[in-house]
Length: 123
Length: 230
Image (cartoon, rainbow over all chains, first blue to last red):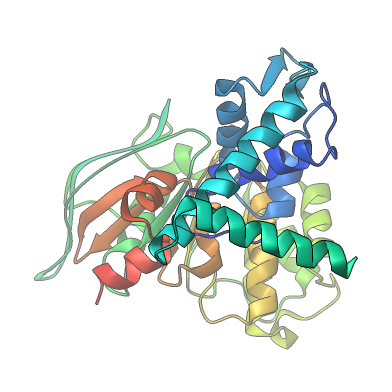
């Protein structure tokens, strides 16, 4: 996973885990790997991974069981919640970019619908 | 617990001040990047922490004690200069380190050696600069040291060796082990640091948590480094 080093790394790890949950790769209740493995894999300081795990817990996405590690929340709404959050953020970025180019939200939506039609025809 | 405590540290070589009043605290389990161009005082500070250089004035405590014989037994120091005898074979260098330091773990060192792609039978004189840098790291990380001080472990070596050194350092991380790594090549190494200290002419002019600096400046540590030292 390549990082954008101009932004805090731990937040990028948090985003990556959220995306994996939204895609269904990490099921609710799954145990997250111990700090060491992701640190070696991502080539970051283990404290950075811990920072990411703390942030996930602060957002209520994970919980820790003493001596056992960090687990994803067992809340059945978790996946929906993350999907909505990610969709909301992507939509905001899209609207902001269109706004800068002088499009109204309605025009942005029309452009998006047009694109969706083209994409569907392609399939 | 603070593994390193430095207060008002000054060091003079003849008429030149190498360190002009440094204050620094480093907690256990941190990986500190000591950044600055050549001549900024990084090596002088590391040598003093290692107990091989002595302050002109100020206070230094390492693992709760003044640097000296007792701290040297628990601190692994890798100087920038080549300190391994070239007539040795790799296996001799390991044996030498084992005889010298009670905390040397031969099995651990052999594992690291393999990871670093080094052969015990190779004469040190046949190793490339990058391979010698890897060997230096194996000798230091093969010890059960509480504090590891590395002076410019990435400089002058090829990219594959840099990568191995970086991974070796990550593998050596433990919650009860503190590392201080000096470098004038920030690059990929910045992912390793949780705290950074920028030195210039013997003074700290910027210090902080790496992640907070990224957030505050909207820049990588390397970009901040380049701008500050322009």
